[in-house]
Length: 216
Length: 220
Image (cartoon, rainbow over all chains, first blue to last red; front, side, top):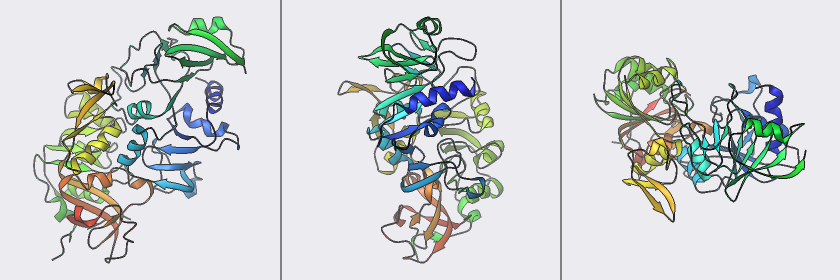
């Protein structure tokens, strides 16, 4: 995946956020989103390891070893930031107090199921906070390329990889276009760049409706 | 005699027995009680341990050292991937493992410490991680029964303690430490500094001293 594709997805996902939102950003493309937020869209970033009010990454000589995000990378805390323990942090998440979670996925199904934590046979063993976030956040935005590195569709009729949760995706932003789950129906609402409808049809194996709102 | 005793790291970890279940704080290595872990690795020979910790340390660091010594029988965690050796040990069956969603992991510890046998959460319903667990509909939403977690010994890290055992955490080094400090028969706290009673404002105390049994002066 090129940086250009990643940036295009992050830029479009950033437009889904509203001033004042409490937002949890996953690792990867979601972490690029702050760079695309205009000054008028001030959001409060939550990281599940115990901080509301995450700021930019510090200069290397100003790293605080006690201050990291969920990717275990150094961050800063903005004025007005608040710290809390992990149990409280996930009580916030499950309790619906986080407005938006933005995260990557391996597959999203036509019904909004998400698979993003396990690939059988691969040397990974960890779920972290993914299941809690997609169940608890009020709005779940998935950022991902439309196809895998081997060219397989990632928007699929049913997830074949282990599920993170059922029916939880609200918006899926890919480099080709934006999909929304409207009354539980996967719907293409926007084409990005010079994408044509045929390009989407070729890259998506899930059934979807088309209700184009605008061309950006 | 004060309820909470101040002891050396070696004396503290000497209380850990073969077959014990231990909780260890930290998100990765941040907020991990590294002085206590080092003492456990170097001066204790307790084996067959069940470790409850978000990660099994990192490769050759923190709990990763205990793993290399073959002293972990079972690990309960949300994210093994930060230590590839732990992933390998689990996948090859050298250690038993239980994977929990991170919020379920944290809440299970809180429940254990609060005297609750378990709780229903919508998280993980219908997934691999709910297999073998009771599922039921609450207000029409599938929930999973998760059991509270308790341990024989908890090892936690706080930036500051007072001599009574009140604890204060710094920034994101707090993570799982406060919950774990409530959920074990013996709670050993490593503190970067230990001050007199009153040195931590009562309104800033996160872990009140009744939870803490042993205090060890550790890394700052």
